[in-house]
Amino acid sequence: MSVTVQTSMERVLDLLSDPPEAPDLSAGYLDLLGPPAKPSLAQSVMESTFLPRIYEKVWRPIGFNMAKGWPFGPDTAAEHALAREWLGLAGRPPATVLDVACGPGNVTRALAEGVSSGGLVVGLDASETMLAQAVDAPAEGTAYVRGDAVHLPFRDGVFDAVCCFGALYLFDDPWTALDGMARVLKPGGRLIILTSRRPSPLPGARLAGELLRRTTGFTVFGDREVTRALDARGLTGVRHRRYPLMQLVGARKP
Ligand SMILES: C[S@@+](CC[C@H](N)C(=O)[O-])C[C@H]1O[C@@H](n2cnc3c(N)ncnc32)[C@H](O)[C@@H]1O
Image (cartoon, rainbow, N blue to C red; front, side):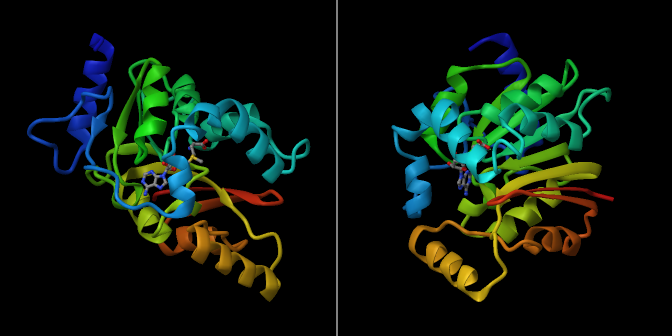
């Protein structure tokens, strides 16, 4: 393990609410979970060995760009730029950033590009196979944790910014996950979420979404569902961009 990784990892351990006495770093990330629990159908795809290998170069750009309405919606590079902008990373003292459900580290690395030298971007994910890809492409100022996004293992108020892209719809309890994201933000810290969006308010679309959730574990959020949830958690300055099947939501902790 390089000196940079060790230093980043020491900083990560410092952010934890209950740091382990003997941290398991054997896979190149800090493993806070035991053997994988039985995942939903949607999450078991994320834990396969195949998807993580094609995720960043094939699945992510094709699937997400279509859902964002390419060529009218932002492509991957524009999406990353929006994340850095809404999180206010440029031109500020080195930030401590959390990338929730980081997958193979694609967004984690993009965020690290926007953080001043000395900052830290922590990628957290539950999937061993996704994290194996993430640590295979190490980037300055990043570190990875295998943990549960629904029960974030960090202390209150330790992050300047929290990002959660392409994952809220996979969580078995997205609202508890949002509680955690708001909790770990420092006052003045910013949050950005890219998630699913139900394209129609009609009851048929709601019913189809509910059926999808019950059969696969994938949640399709209503148009105002996530923004309202952020309001309800006391976050302010809520921003919202709608795409055909996705939505980008941002807010700040007062
Ligand atoms: C589609 S990938 C998103 C990766 C990246 N954030 C992006 O925008 O491309 C979704 C990730 O969410 C992770 N995930 C799902 N449920 C999780 C949970 N409860 N805790 C941590 N990670 C979770 C999966 O393992 C998967 O890597």
